[in-house]
Image (cartoon, rainbow, N blue to C red; front, side, top):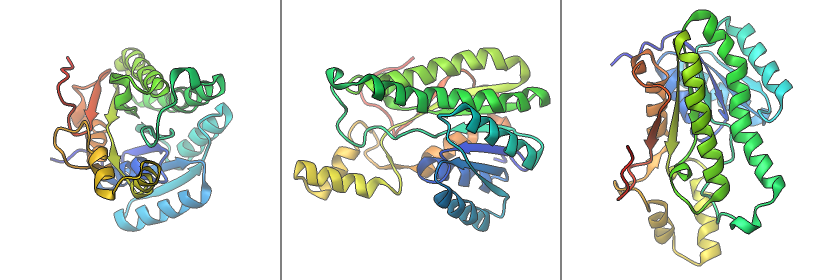
Length: 266
């Protein structure tokens, strides 16, 4: 299936590594030009060069901190100036969850709460706020936000609160922006293999005194396929949602974690 993404312009926050990088790669493979956004300039430049070489598309790195209004506005202005139009926004700039024991409810500090919400929820909102005007003017756009399965389960209060907030934001944006031809969706990854996974497993092995095999088994818990879902698997879902082919899906959530056992979501 041709996803009709040739010459679309995508902005991918958190695009220098992990799922953001995988998403940027898949979008470029499908013919999009991509603005990759992250705080670390060195990793961002390296990613942009790598993706441009491997995909043949134009990859523009822009350093920005999505926790700051002015930084996000400057990023969107620079991206708009570079291409003249912005068609797709993928929000992926957030600290990954599930890489260590979650703090108990009574251990959560105000500072940790506000940092989490500012980075993921307000960060996503800032990016949407600055990029959506380009989409409204042209009457078409896609906004996809990476959230997480903690939105559907307990055990990690901060993770649940921030991810539920992303879903609520998405539904409200979808209702408001739909008349302009803009689809807004959420993707919930589960435990996903990225380039950081081996270091996460090593920390778990050291902390719990378990084997690599047991750490891998724990990684697959809650996945009915019993196989690792990697960043490219998630990127394929996001790339479809970013395309004109996804017109029937908006204001909703797609889980991309290999299937959750027992529970029924409707």
